[in-house]
Length: 119
Image 1 (cartoon, helix red, strand yellow):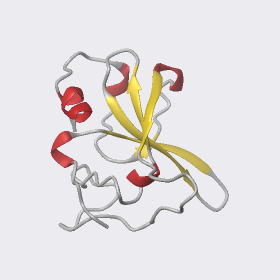
Image 2 (cartoon, rainbow, N blue to C red):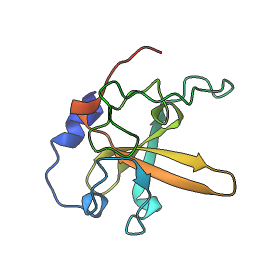
Image 3 (cartoon, rainbow, N blue to C red):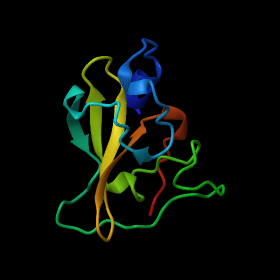
């Protein structure tokens, strides 16, 4: 929560927020991966398979800007926490692995959407 609140307080323009990252989306081509540092993970146990259940008690969807950020639920439970080296904003990132592809997805860490929901 502290990192999300710190991110929300940053008002300086930056390439990391030139495109809205309010909802989960594939990594925009305008973002350079080397401008982020990984500072943590939301995975509880790297040897345990986390749930694929999503948390949407108010009818939101994965791609909704106002979807809750529930760390114990998919895809947050498979995410790493990354910080922009230029401005200090924080983001969640995970690798979506489909049948024939992998794709890095990203979402801004927003304090008003963080939910400590039990499984």
